[in-house]
Image 1 (spheres, rainbow, N blue to C red):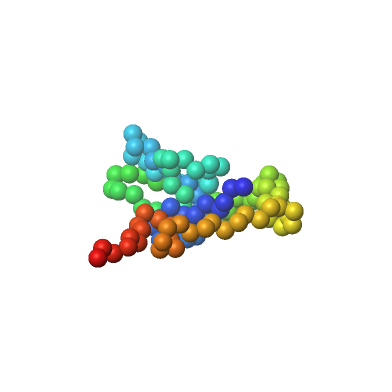
Image 2 (image 1 turned 90 degrees about the vertical axis):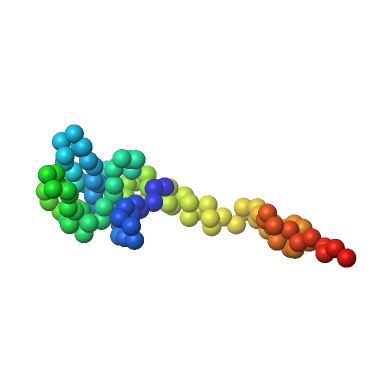
Length: 118
């Protein structure tokens, strides 16, 4: 199941509704509807950041005309969610035993308590 993508701007937790890409050869920033998949050289933006985007002097911004809206979940996503909930609620699943601590400290990790020297 795909999770909701968040805005790429630091500290912003709003859901992404637009995708920003750059055409460096044309000195152009393009803000369009949210891409179907996250790409390494594009940025997901919330509506506020998509509308307020500014570019360096000499660059041009091409914006999608119309409202930005969050994508609707597809039938595949809803089916995956329903199956995940169904699987989590199964009572015939074997319970996984809790991990046992290792070593004299009772903790797992890279540090160990060693007995002191006399």
